[in-house]
Amino acid sequence: MADTPENRALVGADEPDESMRVEMLAASLRADATDLGAFMEALAAKLGGALPQRTRIERSGGMFSHNHPVRRISVNLGDWEYVITLEHGGLAASRTHLVRGIALKSETIGVDEWIETLAAELTLLAERSTQDSAALRRLLE
Image (cartoon, rainbow, N blue to C red):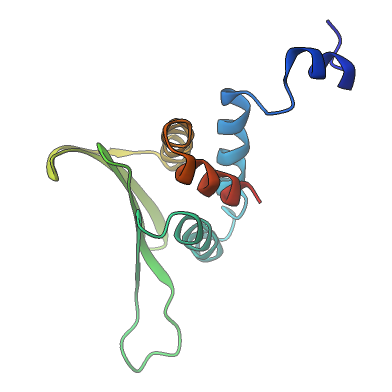
């Protein structure tokens, strides 16, 4: 069947399917990855704006510093906490499996894998919660 507006209306495909939503979200999160400082600022703005109760942002620089760049972002999604840190001029990404708030297993993963996995988890979360679904839409804006 050809991908036309009429056929999408017949199938009800006005909304992107889950794999497309994950790809769109991952691309959105990756958008500023060439400049690591800008990437962390953009990621903090997107995640902090869309999921303020689930996102913790830490900035570096002292009280008298003029610049307070994002140093660490953590996103708590219930069973998993995703952390990305800017350190020594590079990014370090990890995820930790949590059970009742206790860290059972922490693993370092590549930044691309971190983005893909976080995007997939956010998509699953959005499917379970209307509030989180609205947050996912804000991330894609």
